[in-house]
Amino acid sequence: MIKTLNSDMTIVYTPNFPSNVLVSAKRFFALIGIGANLGNKKRIFDKLYRFLLDDRAIDPVRTSPLLINPDFSDPVRPIYLNGVIAVRTWLSPIALLHRLNAIEARFGRARSYKNAPRTLDLDIIFYETKTIYNDRLVIPHQNWFERASVVVPMRLLGGQR
Image 1 (cartoon, rainbow, N blue to C red):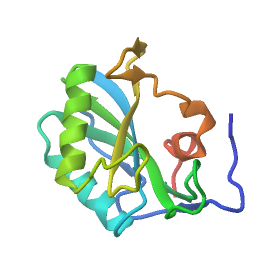
Image 2 (cartoon, rainbow, N blue to C red):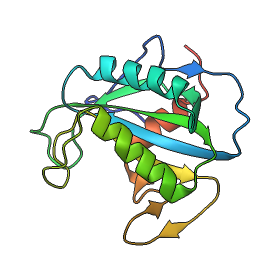
Image 3 (cartoon, rainbow, N blue to C red):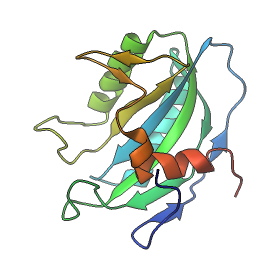
Image 4 (spheres, rainbow, N blue to C red):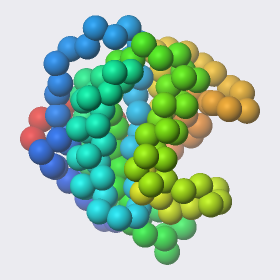
């Protein structure tokens, strides 16, 4: 498991990352990984945060600081900004996946090919304590523990500035 930053990574703090939000009455807990390597990534994440505050299906509970890091599969691609958002929801795992895909599309995500550069990537890392493995959804997210883009923000989720 990657536990520390290396020289290619930088932690970034913005007004909404990290953030604590009021407690939600929604039943299910999920941890969402967020990433982008196109456009004004900080602005996109701030818009996402404000969008989720108004969303009726998903309540953001806490956000991590953000991590600037290279693409893990191809260091020549544009640099990523990544973080995690702890949420509460009434949605089932598959309904949450569909909702996150709709949000990605709203924010300009185009799926031209696998791992294509993107304006917004939203992944369900955990959903309660569920384990799901099918052709539409894998929870916990596959290989999350090997990705600094998930592990480092997740470790910083509870930290303060």
